[in-house]
Length: 253
Image 1 (cartoon, helix red, strand yellow):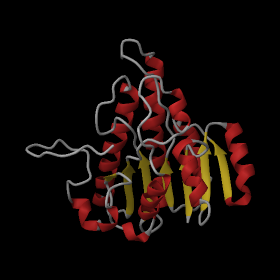
Image 2 (cartoon, helix red, strand yellow; image 1 turned 120 degrees about the vertical axis):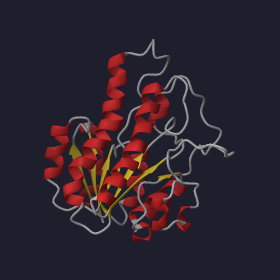
Image 3 (cartoon, helix red, strand yellow; image 1 turned 180 degrees about the horizontal axis):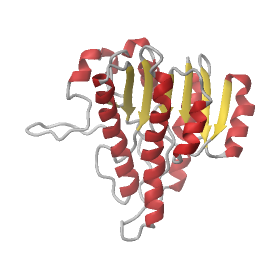
Image 4 (cartoon, one colour; image 1 turned 45 degrees about the vertical axis):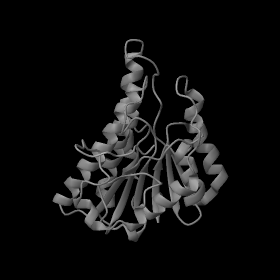
């Protein structure tokens, strides 16, 4: 399988590459030239690295024009953004968070679609984050950008179904992982329990496999019982970002 992973030189992208590289051909995209050089040196011919700022559509478009064959896209590129009250936030940093986390995801999906739709049941996996399903104090830019990624995923899934294009697109709420992003954290306390990379990888591998064909527009967590899902779930309100009345439910973080 040929997979493009954005933001793959650090964080969750790096975790996924370390495991997916064993059985797949990986193209990693990052705006950090030094990181690209380091990761391509580490993995050799099994991995191709491309320097690209995902928030710049011209760069993204040129990057994907060079990719002739593709089975899946995993959007991991993201930043934490400004922390603190909106009044104290630097508005340019706030806007930049939206540009990288949301617009970067949109850019890569748009550029990849012409390639992915040539295949039967190709895959897109987007990564959301803390604040996408619940308010996150002093992280307004990050939370808004990641919540928007969830709604974008749901909307694009419906568009593709309507257009009879067999690309499955889903979004993962991964949980907290001890990555570089946490080094930039100045408000939130570290979680009592870090996310389990094995659980995350299991969900990613499921969404990349033919076992998930037809499952699209879903907002999933590694602890969900996702292996019991089938394509009929795509017409359900389950595993979506919704307002729910008259029910008691427990948050999944």
